Length: 251
Length: 237
Image 1 (tube, each protein chain N blue to C red):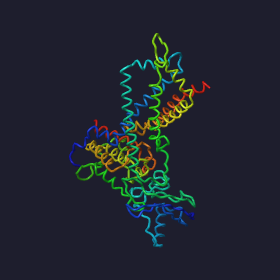
Image 2: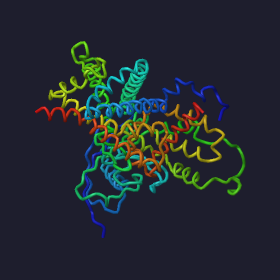
Image 3: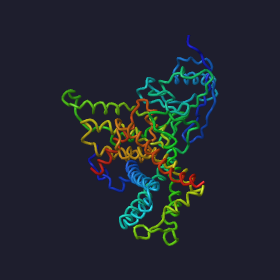
Image 4: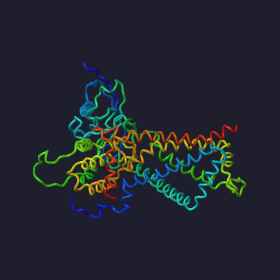
């Protein structure tokens, strides 16, 4: 039998983008330690709905298996919570003790305006991608894999950077609210592959421009982004972005 | 993607003002100062050398003439760029997150967030203020005209050693200098590796080595600098 536990939550409630928000206390008894963190929030929301006194707590989520990038909460001061290499949907209540207090806040950055409660608007990332984070090739089906040889090292690097799910934890955890890891990962991913070569220079310049235009802060190389990234993307991606940019401008 | 536009290759000024350009400039100018600081520390240590090694070294530097002026101008320009960008990045960070977290914690390794990385603006400002006082006390302090002179190889040269010895017998100078040099160590701890990362000169393989070198450099420079004031202060007691 799984242990039941009592957890005290302090959750950021904000009724709309321009409303003033505040942390509100909730206590849940009889939480199952095998529940995921988001399931605990589901339990809270069901209780709130039954009570009918206030709206349920809004939070983004979709696949709940760490691959879609929809979820994102700052739990106990850390984006996606205290566990390494997981999105917050993969966090489980067994990592907490009976009686713990957990503070839950939205990802905070001016470039990620709060929509409601814990839901933020991350469309700034979409606009960075739209600025150049793709390959414009209008052809038919995928070519035979063997017809496009790519060295193993390049594949490995490209794949590591391609694992970015665009959740925004890098921005949330960055003391400067910089989007360098996200932007760097996208640029580095394509720069390592033959398909990315034709638009390599214009891509980096446009994406970096867009990143700046969205109002993200500048990177100070704290590396906090790498520590919270559910895909453990290295800040080597940021160094790569900088090489690519300097190459595009001076090369 | 639309055809290439002129914007795709930014002019040099907007490239330098971009998030990448700002960091690259901060890195280059910081490295220039790191190089200077290492030379300065080596110069300080010549105080412990035989005879008039310290004064002769100072005199040799002065006799470089135009070359010295060129180096000084370069350093001042680097400092201005470094300081302006540092403040700009700090203000930008405050604009990028106007409301902070109620609870914020670092997730630890492999992140490099540390007291040194979080205090760059603070240590930087202290170093800048210190620098002005320091140059006033020593470079533009009393010289040959005020009697701080000695005869070396038939030439009247400045007795900087006497000035330094006198200054560092004062606890405010000795311990103030020591404190600031420890802050310099903190600034270098984050700054030295961060400069290479900003210039895109890092990769996963190099990172552990560069972190180690930066830490060793930070400790080495701080220890090298505090040796002189502490030695002078305590040997005069």
